[in-house]
Amino acid sequence: MPQNLEQDITGIILVGGKSRRMGRDKAFLEVAGKPLFEIMLELFRGIFARILLVGDRAERFAGYGLPVVPDIYPGSSLGGLYTGLYNAETKYVFVSSCDLAFPRAEIVDYLCSFLKDGFDAVVPSTRYGYEPLFALYSKSCLAPIKAQLDDGEFCAYAYYPKIRVRYVPPEELARFDRDGRAFLNLNTPEELAKIGEKS
Image 1 (tube, helix red, strand yellow):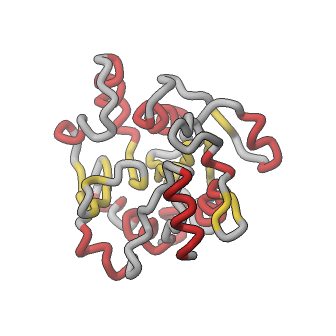
Image 2 (tube, one colour):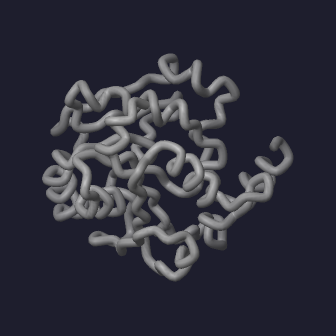
Image 3 (tube, rainbow, N blue to C red):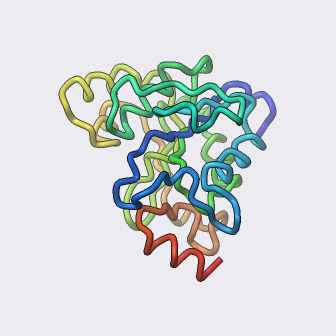
């Protein structure tokens, strides 16, 4: 990604999930000996000059020297995105959940390359649907997200028809994700065990 663009984007890592299905804090589950949170942090530090964590229990991340802000609308990933956008000092944010085992810097760079085209959001999709928690957003999304949250609707992409979105389909991303694992997130102990067998 061009140097001038990285200054315009804050990397947001969502760390507020309750990890109910996993039964323990997903941020610190290890894949190949490294906590999931650190996998994402390492990737973001290689790309973005500013990084912000969104979630509760800030003491979990005391050793990382990063700002942690609590959710303005607790209990949903959309609320986490809103909080990140609201608190970011840049016009754009790149948001990610903290439970991706094999995120790709090349995909981040590619999605961010559309920033110059003036979209409100740049969102990848896979054969399973949109990936709203590994995507680029502008502060212009704040008002439609807030309106949706105030209506009690927490779907992470229900407001997309109200903004200008660049959808990035699977065939466009294939060259950056040859093994098909870039969007693999871990929700259950079984999924974690399966990753361990393959990695």
